[in-house]
Amino acid sequence: MAPRWMFLTMLALIGPGSISAHADTIQVIVDRLAFSPTEVQAKVGDTIEWVNKDPFAHTATATSRAWDVAMAPGHAARLTLTKAGVEDYFCKYHPNMKGRVTTVP
Amino acid sequence: MFVKSSALAFVLCLAPTFAFAQGAAKPTDPQIAHIAYTAGAIDIEAGKQALTKSQSKEVRAFAESMVRDHEAVNKQALDLAKKLNVTPADNDTSRSLAKQAADKKAELARLNGAAFDKAYVANEVAFHKAVNGALETLLIPSANNAELKGLLQTGLKLFQGHQQHAEHVAAALK
Image (cartoon, rainbow over all chains, first blue to last red; front, side, top):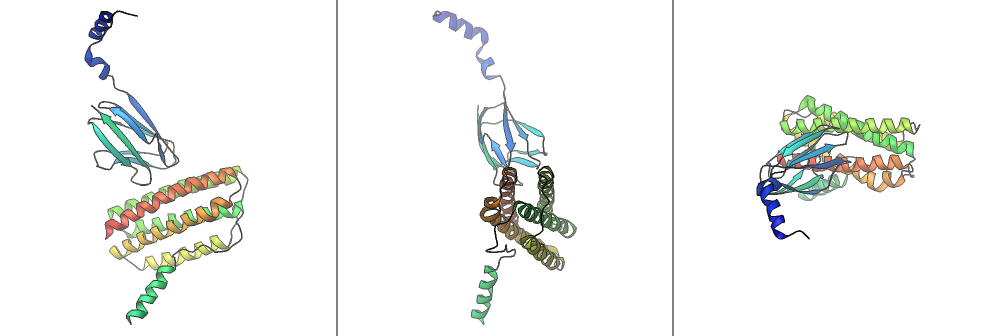
């Protein structure tokens, strides 16, 4: 087992900011009128990429209207998250399609 | 007088705008394909009519999405029929649907402005409700081919979405 000081030195070298500063891209597949996964967890700065596999146009529209992302048939669309919080979203054209994005700081 | 008019209203409420043949024999796959295609074609026509008549931004956006979606799903249906070497077969249900749609189109043609918008959207709610009922209780359970069944199931989700969208537009028009 590595001594505690080694671990602490490594943490100090990496720096406290660099772990959380790494932004991820989280994919949500849109297929047969459903968002999959329905719920995603993300951090501020992460990007959600919706990949529309349907031959239909869809949107990912926040219930709060904070964002409204349009997806052409067979295309992907992206949104970079700038605020922490929970956003429920739906498709404007097919309101039975629902999802949720939870963003932590 | 009141009794008479409310009785009439009651009867009108009971009579759906679009009725599917009740107690008909279980449809075959080629007949199911024809019914589903006809229902899509009817809604494309209705959407095109709305685009020539409506000035409402919301109604036009709804009509555009109906034309776009039903064209896409009908293309899938034609591609599948071709792949399975199935010729969609005309039948009483699809003929009756087409007749009812022609009558509705003529009725809507006489309306303008807000009256048209309300009648068109109300009919879209009723039409999708009737088609969804038929898909759930008759067409999906009767379909033999797995791919046809799958397409109908996607169609049901799509049309349920359209019904909700139409209900939202109807609520906004009030």
